[in-house]
Image (cartoon, rainbow, N blue to C red; front, side, top):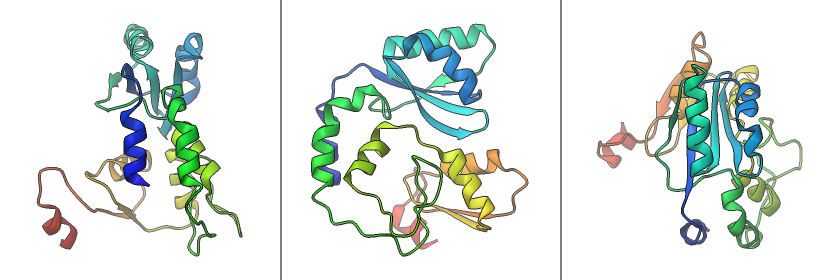
Length: 195
């Protein structure tokens, strides 16, 4: 499924962008309102860490307006405008492909990045969920709140470089949870995983 998603993503048109904005979701929504058909809130990573995504020109215009308003923001180095309308052309094919996977209710607690809450009882991610996951805003901040309320003591980030554990530290600096990253850019992957 990963190779299929990569193929679908490669077929998307160029011209998208994403930007990190150090302001609340509500404040950011005001800045992007005039571009409702061209920009989306792509992620809420913390109380004042919001990501926008969409058409390059609209992102750049909003970045200029944010700078004028004294709001810190910067463009992200990404291949596509994830979690925006720019993914719409691949969503039907992605959902069809995701429907070919057999899903089961999770045996461990699984949080949804779409809602920030745990899947309950027998509910499980399915093809429609993964479609929403690709298109809707990532609610990382809400997921972190759910983890904290659940008494989680250790965060493990599985990815190419520790980004999310750094976000978690900024969002909840008083938390004493331990953090572990699986990989780090510029270091030997095997050695880093074993460490």
